[in-house]
Image (cartoon, rainbow, N blue to C red; front, top):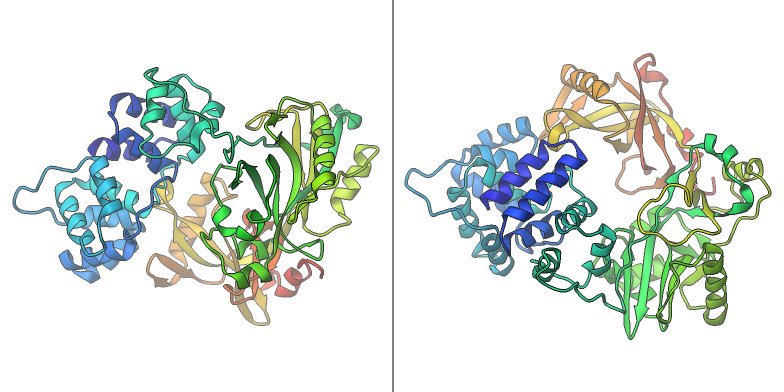
Length: 524
């Protein structure tokens, strides 16, 4: 556990991607099995512990530390793991030796709810400050060290002299602590077998389009299609096995049994998961009702019927089509769909155009709802994992803008834990400010320092780690759309909000009113 804690600590202070990769690779080289496998699982979100909840940790601290002192400390530090690690009283007598990472993982996984408090207290007694911090991060699943699952897999690939696409191909047939993967990476074992049916294939992604690049592109070399406002998925089916994956390879099929139960074919398909009613795409907020669920009720399935709008076909009855040109794959997809017309699936239509100005007009005013822009794909492009430069571009619609008033601020995480960097903002409804969203990016480091100083100097109330501020600062917020929301007092929420600029020049009384946002609702 000590080595794992040291790794997390160094990663949290390492801002550079290459530096993070080196740290993880060095850890894999110096750490034996199974600890390094469980570390890889933790960094790829592959570990969950049913009974390990933040409430349990807070309860243990309340038994050892004055509750008022803890709440004051938590308010100042802004992070539960850091607060507990620092405030936990070290035992007067010698504690047991610190546990290994493998011991922590296996006992957390197998322990009953009644056994867990004693286990956790013993470990907190045995570990130092960094170890306690890492233990709580591991338990709660929120490492927040600037390492994505993809980055961790890239580090593993570098450790073994492999390509990350090779790792992605075999990843979903493996389970923690990944003994077979490490044996393969070190040349002690064969490459793990790829599941022929139901396996995940790394997806191909698009580069954002710089409109200045259009003049250098030949319109006749590209196909255009709508960029639908759902989530990208891969449907992998064959030999009675059906899986639905997110673009990062997470199996999300448990939340969509109605879609998977109708699959009676063998293919790997690339598309967009949407809520579709009467052939029309519903707002993204409807899809959110069904995302991140392991199970879903029949009522929810009926109220929010899902479908997949197909972009591409990667495998057809065992035939790997990824090396073929996109034009050929599109023809194959259309023929495949015409022969089967499976329930819950339809084709994403191609967008005909003669030149870039004509396509730009369609992008500005799409003739259909539920799109957030266009995709441009070279007709001759193979399906290549990752985000290669050139074959595919995403040309999103220009963001919407609103001037909103800062209402609340909360500390960030990781290197931002000392700054108030998460901002809740609202617009006017009559004489009342009502919240419509929260943003934590879009500003520079220098602007963050200014915003943090403003929050501290204009705090009017505190609610745990949250500060309420005087209604005096206007933020120009960029967002991709507006949707109905029962969680916000305003009844509205902004889609993908980010801070566009700080309006030091604008009085709060002149910020936008809610009617301006209502005009952007779908169908308004």
